[in-house]
Length: 251
Ligand SMILES: C[S@@+](CC[C@H](N)C(=O)[O-])C[C@H]1O[C@@H](n2cnc3c(N)ncnc32)[C@H](O)[C@@H]1O
Image 1 (tube, rainbow, N blue to C red):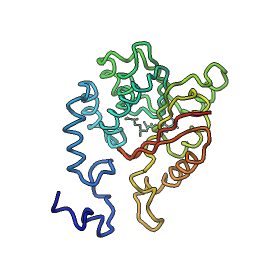
Image 2 (cartoon, rainbow, N blue to C red):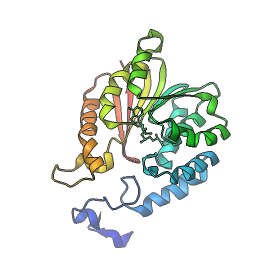
Image 3 (cartoon, rainbow, N blue to C red):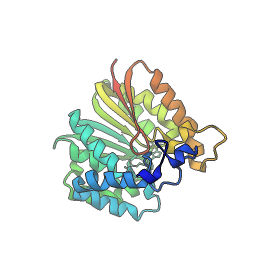
Image 4 (cartoon, protein in one colour):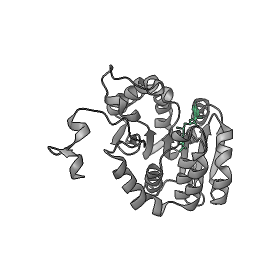
């Protein structure tokens, strides 16, 4: 590590460069440090079926949109720490975050899993079945917003959920928040994924961005501002993976 330092700061920071050349999603300062975390603390504890699902997802052309395994480990721990039982996931893809959550729930725990694409969910489903947790999952194919609206027409669903994980279309994050805040119980947690959006949220406008990053950057920035001003929640911005914002409902 000493050779990477200059006046106490990594060379690339000292020269004002950004860290966009790393091969992983994390905002950590080096690939080596991220590998260290994975190899020391994540892979040895990763459930065999999560590992299998990760390997299977690797072959998907969009594999990079799945949450990374350190985030899966975090979600699994969080769900256990808050004793979540009734949950929602918005944005399933092949199911890595879904399986990490399902494994953490009690036998009678539930996940309402929403995604526009059933085919990707069905790719991972055999592994979820093998893990013995498919009975906890109620998958609904289609846009998530109408499903959330439908839930809200029934008073018994208001405040009925312990945990909601949002990892879908960034354009709708604020629309999701309008609904999730009513669905989560007092003291319950909503987790928004990708709230640092490849680090781009802090970039000045003139910094060139990949098209998909540019497309959603403003929506993520708006979400971050809105969450910070929302008196109904306490928040915690975590800088693991691509950034996760935890919101704990207080009123
Ligand atoms: C980042 S991926 C989810 C990754 C997943 N959490 C994992 O761990 O692998 C985003 C998912 O959101 C889904 N999606 C996009 N727009 C959506 C919408 N309006 N409603 C529901 N799902 C949507 C996409 O089909 C995609 O599978």
